[in-house]
Length: 168
Image (cartoon, rainbow, N blue to C red; front, top):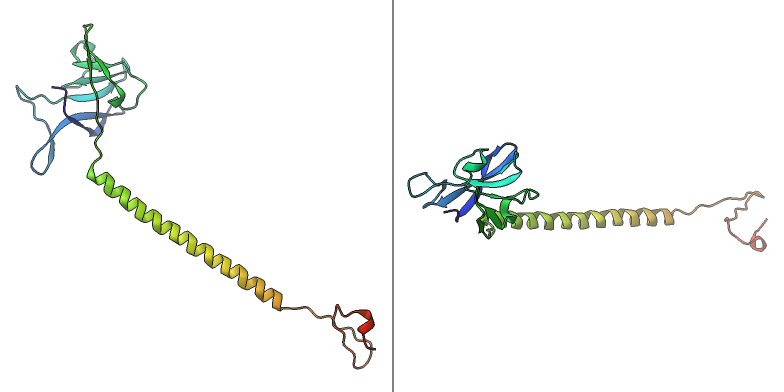
């Protein structure tokens, strides 16, 4: 039966990922073992014909395939709905249901936790930079410049004093 769960293999077949059918046992996941009643199926992309292929072993011989899909544009086979049987006009319609594993939800929670700390860090850093700029501005505004105009022995006039108020 082609029905079941498929998982991506650890290696590549001709520089493309392949998928194999698997079953869950008590605590581990394993590949199905070939027997008379239970055959493992692989899904891979065939570069020669540019088709997605389902078969119980890797081969480039078109006549030995179990099913193939003409959707050669997809990088993964899950968009294939209509699968063809070699040397036949018959087709098989399949639907796929993606399953999100518990590990991926844990990763997204960790990502959100990391993202929260990143946003808090950026806010704190922005506040520090703003405080430093405000401190520098206030420090510069307290430092007033004076120009002393010495006209006599005892006169000093602040720059900006109107001329009529100056004392000689």
